[in-house]
Image (tube, rainbow, N blue to C red; front, side, top):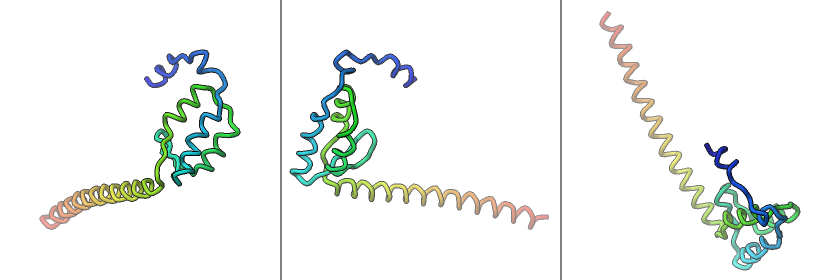
Length: 121
């Protein structure tokens, strides 16, 4: 269904024109000024301001791409990424422990059933 929607999107003449990469530079300067990093909310990737600039400066984008990059890029303190990592790690550990506990209980229940069956024979 997403492919169908994507095919139906028609770019305007303006959107198809070559974009001005300089439109990305204010966000880089702002991040540098405040000692922050850039986070792409779409891809979940973090960039230092220098990495962001190096990633985009030698590529050609159309106006649609430039707008998309700007819409999905936010300035954040890298500590937010560290906190998010720890939060996700803890959530995954809890999920794994829950799943492991359920599997262990199921396995022990089955083992006891097998033992009981053969003890009765």
